[in-house]
Length: 452
Figure 1 (cartoon, rainbow, N blue to C red):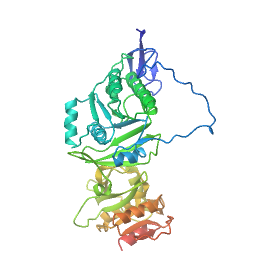
Figure 2 (tube, rainbow, N blue to C red):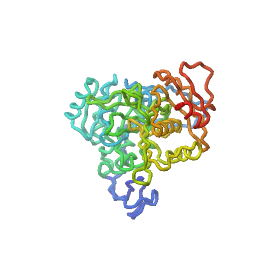
Figure 3 (cartoon, helix red, strand yellow):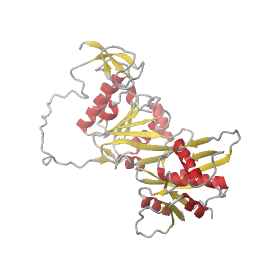
């Protein structure tokens, strides 16, 4: 039995301290240092191996042989797109998100759809609960094995018996190892169990999917080093009051972090949304003022989103400014530009702005659509739903160009839009587009074109 000793860890950043103190010297947070009893052993590997590994040696970069990455397709198009083509063998993927957002449902659907042997380990739900969820998503896979266990040594014993092709852990905060005596969910336990799982993944070339809880600040709970240790960090976002979910990649050692996956939460599980515009643009029978369609980019995927604006006389004296899904400071800037450069008197009016679907957009290319929606509501003149916008508005009132304009135009053509409004300073390819292009240089030109 190794000697048991006590150490102090910061629950916010994971820094280790020799004694207790009120403020962490690493992250400067107060009252986050707790005492944990740790017990170190000589061997903490996932499997007690008697064979010695060959010692690695330095190689010239020209001598290094490139091995093609072997990937396992998950049969989930959105996830495969975000991962860059599927699960890389030996990779460790961490999925984080709010409670109840659908993390367990997503990974269970993937485990039931992958045409390989999958071991789904749950430390939060019983086997009967998981079976009920599997019946709800109406997917059955005889290659998916369910295990309810939290001790990593016991999990590895089952892994040796089953020999799965993919391992799913729900969640990393519920696991504990016998190597240390800290409680599950503590910084030292998360770090130790993660290290064991990563070692298992690398030595056996088995993809491991981990679910991670998040704290009140929205970051993955536990030490920050956890995100550095894994190969892929995915964030599952959305509002439980809306049906859509967005899967983003925050870190990906095997692909781009610019990709995006969109799902719709239904009673029978998560549905992949191949055309996001179907849930981001509302259906209406009549043309209404104050709405405009913007073309935005999430990674390399163009999305059509609906901007809604309401401009009314300030009833309480002081004008109100409110946004949902849009930067409030940028709205103040656009209103100042409209007043100073274009002569629209909006200083004594309330302005409310909303991006439908509950998503948050930071792309400056939606500026022109925001201007169009505000002016449409102010003038009470409807904009044709067949018109979409993609341009940035500068402080001088000029309409600035945006990136990847050709992809935005092509996507608008596919979705049936008839008119596309953009900056005349954009370099559009010489390919003839069937959609009508309106190129403007100032806000006044855009207003005259739309409301002539």
